[in-house]
Image (cartoon, rainbow, N blue to C red; front, top):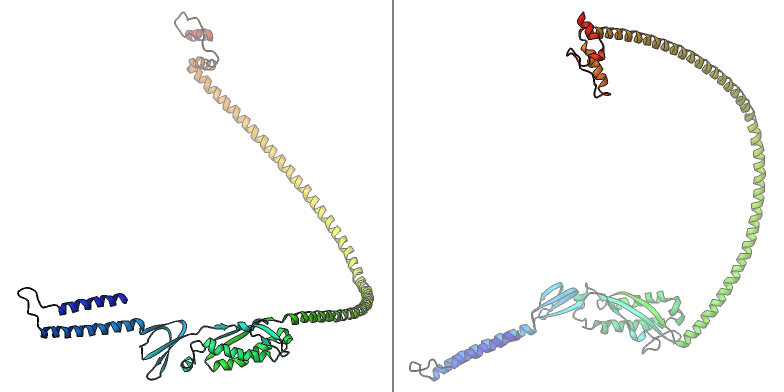
Amino acid sequence: MLHRLKVMARAVRRALARTLRPAGDGPSAVPFSAEATLSRFAQAQRILLFVATAVLAGWLLYKHFPVETVARGAIGVRTNQLTGGVTQWRDGSVFVLPGLHEMRVYSLRDQVYRPEQVSRSSGPAPLQSVEGLSVGVDLAVRYALDPARIAAVAKSLPDNYAGEIVEPAVQGVIYKVFARYTVREIFSTRRAEIQQVIEGELRPRLAADGIVLRGVLMGKVDLPADYKRGMEGLLAEELETQKMRYTLELKDKRVKETELEAQADKVRREVRAEASAREQIIAAKAQEEAMKHVLPFKQRQIEQRQLEAEADKQSRMKIAEGSAQARRIEAAGEADARQKLAEVEAWRMERIGKVNAEQMAREGALISQHPLLIQKTLADKLSDKIQVIIAPPPGDGGFVGAGLLGNQRVAARKE
C-alpha cells in the first residue's frame, strides 16, 4: 500500500510539472500569459485535490479495512452505530464499514481462571476458615461465554471480562463460602459439598453477564505449618485409637468365631454319626433285598453255563463229523485225480511211441532214397567238434568220406 502511495505521488508531481510548463519552446511556442497560467494552476489544483482524495481513501482503507474475519471457535458481534442493531457472525468474513459499524470478536472456547493469591496459606490473600486460620486452596474455575446471550450483553460486556467480571465474582464467592467451614472440613470431609456450594452461588452471578459456568475444581489444600503438625499428631492419635478399637473388635469376633466353629463342628459330628447309622441300616436292607434277587440270578447263571457247555459239546461233534467227511471227500477226489493223471500219462507215452515209430519210418524211407543224408548228418554232428578230417582219396574218384562209411556205396553199385 505504501509503495502505491509513493507511485501516485510521483505521478502527481509529473502532472503538475507538465501543467505549469509553457506550451512550447522555440520560435513556434505560444507566448506566456497570465490567463494561461491561472488556467493551468486551476487544473493543477483539481488534479491535486483528486489525488489527495484518492490517497486519503487508500490510507483509510489501509488503516480501517472494511472486512474482518471471525476465526473457528469464535463469534463476532457487529453493532450498527446509527440504528443500534446487533448481528452475530460465525466462522467467516464480515463487512464492517468504518464509522458505521463496530465489530467485536469473542472466543466461545472454555477458559480457566485460577486465583493464584489463594493457592497458598502464606500467599498474599489466603482464604480464611471459620476458626480464623489461613488456608490455601488450588481452585480452577472453568467458564465460557453463552452464545445465546452474547448479542444481548455485547454492549455492556467489557473487553477484559475475565478480569473485570469473572475474577471479582469468584473472589466474592469463595471467601464467603470457605469462611463457613472448618479447616478439617475443608481438608477432608466436605470438599465435594464446598465445590457444589461455590458452583451454586457463582453460576447465577456469571449468567447475569452472559457467562456460563462449566464447573469448579478444588485441588490441593495448603494448611498452615503449625496446624498441619498438630493435625498430623491428632490424626496419628485417632488412627491409633481406631486401630486399637478395630483390634479389640477383631479379637471379640475371633472369640465368637471360635465358639461358632466349635458348635458347628459338634453339629457336623452329630450329623455325620446319624448319617453313618442311616447308611449302615440302608446298606443292610439293600443287601437283604439284593440277596433275594442274587440267588435266583446265580441259579440261572449255573443253568445257563450248563446249557452253554452242552451246546459247545454238540458244536464240537458237528465240527468233527464235518471235518471227517471233508477228509473222505478230499481223499476220493485225490485218488480220482491220480487215476486220471496215470491214464493221461499212459496215453501220452503211447502217443509218443507211435509218433516216434512213424518218424523213424519216414526217416528210413528218406535215407533209402537219399543215402547222402547220412553223410550230411554225420558232418553236421561232427562240425562243432572236428574241424579237419583227413581221408584218403578214393580210387574211383568218388566221395571222399566213402571210406568212413564202409562198403555201403560199393554194395549199392553192385546192386
